[in-house]
Image 1 (spheres, rainbow, N blue to C red):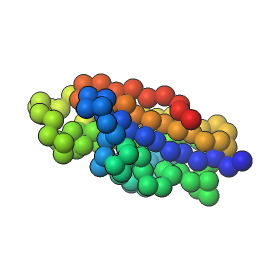
Image 2 (cartoon, rainbow, N blue to C red):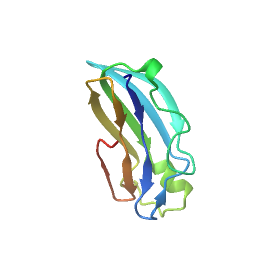
Image 3 (cartoon, rainbow, N blue to C red):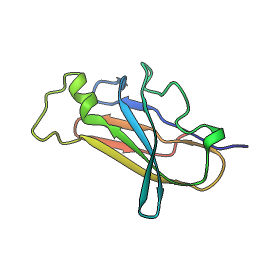
Image 4 (cartoon, helix red, strand yellow):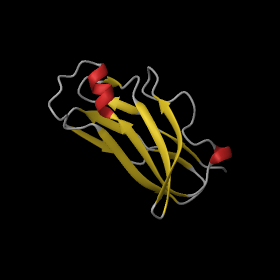
Length: 117
């Protein structure tokens, strides 16, 4: 079995998928941080393709960077100055070749994540 990485972003304040949220993927190697790709969520809050497909999968440390502030601005959430949540980085390790699903539950004043399935 080959590994791969997916995500799903839900807007818990509005009770719907977070459409149009930009996500950057980085690989972390010691003090080095390498940008691998940028994707955006679709109308279901998912990316149209796997963030890291099996052909590109390697175990190691990764970071998903969710551009929450831009998303909140785009949907008209009143902005405080500065916005409480702007950039949400999630750093995590993938230690085996399996499906890693890293969802984000987002609201203007909080977020949570977990390893999903």
